[in-house]
Length: 305
Image (tube, rainbow, N blue to C red; front, side, top):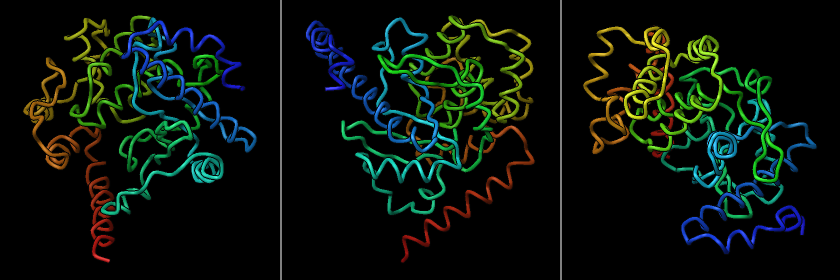
């Protein structure tokens, strides 16, 4: 009854849409209901939730939320609240997705956990924006700078403008320019075109997350493919050195999209070719590699038990 009261015109609107648009609208309606229920469960425990990417962008920079489809609902909680949030949601009407038995150590240390709502919506509950501390983010600061928006008919909060743009670049980078879609570049185009970007602040945020190299290729792609107006000084500040460019551009062509040149490569092949060079600081390469290798060895040990 609460759901129908909040959306009294939903049925009328849906009947006027074609089949594809109707499917998108229904999916986004159920995602909104999922977010509302998560907020109702976590709010009384003092756990704040931010909505990431698709719903936030669709309801703020796109002409219509339906123009920005998404396949799951990404939510962010503070790292210290992550375990408690999972406990509370599963005590409610959310179900934990099964862990991959071949990667139990990875699953336990990963930056998000998958759940499914009673509406059938897949939720990725984040405690960070990238796995294994590859790109360090001050999550508490993200909450302090968050903005309010309307997720359909529901009050919600999402990342502030510069944090949101930084996250879009980070999201593309952490998938190695391999598992991305045109919508991710369109997100950048619309955000830059319809918001006032403080480029100095953005540059600081990118530097803090150590995602300068990946952001350079994101903005070069956005400029080349969609005409996004990125200040020249920003591109020059982000531009990696010649040796790193020589290596990365053997595999990444920012003039095309997706930018990774070899779509038939396996995940492991992509990771070991561009994953490390997409980490800004050379001094972070060995610690990250050792951490990641340790986790994968624990995965292997789990499989042998």
